[in-house]
Image (spheres, rainbow, N blue to C red):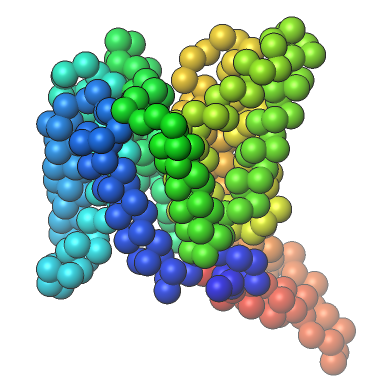
Length: 335
């Protein structure tokens, strides 16, 4: 599957199967986590997170449909409702799985609400409309960590607390294999993953040389379940990352570079903040690029006042006509 410019991308035919598999995978991991693996959050937290995510998604869609005077996308039957709520389902479970707020439910609900709201409140023009630029789950987690200092990330050991022997290797292997399959077959984000992993290794070496950080300690996060989930299921969000292979690779390297800067500044939770920073910078870059293109098109169509216009020699086409002939096709292609 390729997008309009010939580079690999997530087309409409792949979006729904990808969402279904992501939703199924994170649901299975949540159930196994609470019954088998050793998740320390209460069962109420994923339930509250999913309920909040569903509610905010439906409220925002209802408000959008009312203002645009259209039928809500989720009002075409039970099947369409389920498909519509798949992103909210994934976001809610991801927030509940990765945040640790003791037994309090309000921060988890807040994170889910921020995650879903960010898709509507923070949108950038792309030349073909507008879309959200921030990874929803990551945004909800990062904002919650900033506003509630006593909230932290779920301890990495909880993913394998009740496992031993082969189980310690089997679960990470399943995450890697399933994540690689999803990102190879459906999201086409393998270049991004390679850029992120290569950049992470490079920044570990550089930090070891510059700051004297032990190399083993610098690469140790790569062995944790949180790192694997971030790599294969969060950083590769199709809606908020580039489509073409080279920009994908650059995006992954940029996240790693941002992580290195945060670590050198002794900022904790660098994974989530680095992704938020890069997504924000990419969104601002997209806005700037569209603004420059709009200015260029507008400047090219500025009419010449009649009193200043010089009549062309007989038999030649006026310059204003040539300008309209060359500018008009570009407008059609970028609308």
